[in-house]
Image 1 (cartoon, rainbow, N blue to C red):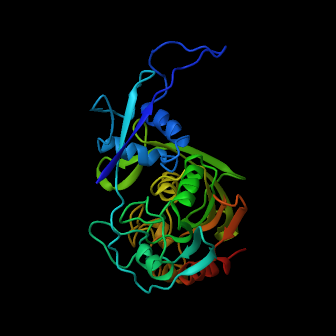
Image 2: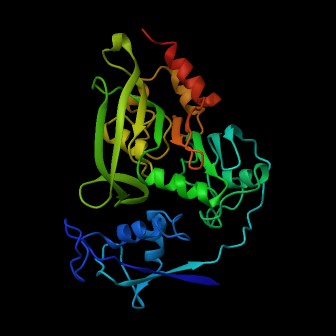
Image 3: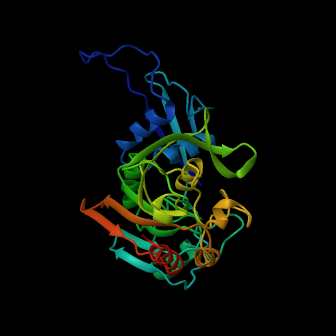
Length: 346
């Protein structure tokens, strides 16, 4: 069962406030519809990405014809948005231990352990963060979909650290807006091969898209892709008199949150993350692996995946408007590697 909502595209205005007939808007359809939904009592929770997915599914039409995200809509055009009734949640709760950093009636912040997938997929219905949340928390917002209740953002399976999950649709909508506006504070710690030569903070801005030769990977692209911005700083470099470092401890601050963003950007800089099974994995004979002391190699091998940890998460509470800030402690495997590296500081 579904419900259809109708919206009317407003007339553009001149600087003096007068309208200018029925000419086409210069704003993309997905952005225009998002703006219209923000002031609609029953549609204000929809994020721009959700609207784009509805467009891709043919659920947003004008005169019965599905529109495209890049279309320009004529003033006074009637827009129909079809929303399906919420699906019955069929996920099985599982008693998987969770480290809670914060919880109230609206949301919960968790320090996710490495090796835990955030949400189920068509091929994995068990052993995920969502399964654990359904056991420990019970009430989660539904607008993330049947397989993603409460999930506003995600971090990779083998990346650990802070993640926020919502309990109500209103909290979900508020946080989705903050993520869309890039007002969320997110900092990651990464342990990498070698060390960048820049001093202070280095800003990297690229486009990220699917790797054309390996669809599992993301890649820096020149044309297609989404804009991605990361700020990098070196917390510590490890090597003989810091002349030729074999590894470094990097802090990465996200201005955007694209899939595999930190991993791809560091690999693009020539400093892939220690233990990363997907990007820049060295063979035993490669110089960057051989440069690691044997004790460091042992700690890298013991990692469940990449040495990447979501250290800081900060945002405005979507209901109370309180400024919240969390620092998530690294899990044992990451901390053991960091301790071994720090024991070799000069």
